[in-house]
Length: 129
Image (tube, rainbow, N blue to C red):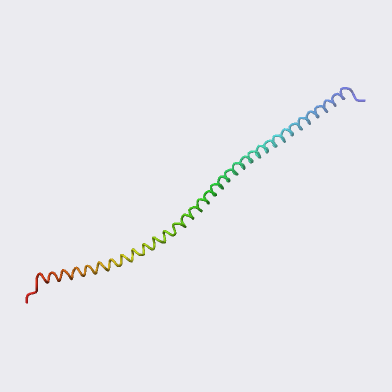
C-alpha cells in the first residue's frame, strides 16, 4: 500500500494539474471571447459604414433624379425656343436680302445724284463755243 504522504503528493499533483488545465481552458476561453468580440466589433463597424454609404448613394440617386427632371424641363423649353429660332433665322435672311436691295438702291441714288449735279452745273455754266 502507498504511503499517505505519497497519496497526498499525488492528489496535490492532480490538483495542480487540474488547476493548470482550468487556467489553460479559462485563458483559451478568454482569448476566443476576445477574438469573437473583436470580430463582432469589426462587423458592427462595417454595418455602420454600409448604412452610411447606402444613405450617400441614395442621396446621389435623389440628386440624379432631380437632374433628370430638370433636363427634361430644359428640353421642353428648348423645344419651344426652336420655333423662335426658326423665325429669327427667317428674319435674318430677309434683313440680308433687304441690305442687298438697299445697297443697290443707294448706288442708283448716288448715280442719279451725280447726273443731277452734272445737269445743274451744265445749266449754271453753259459751255462756250
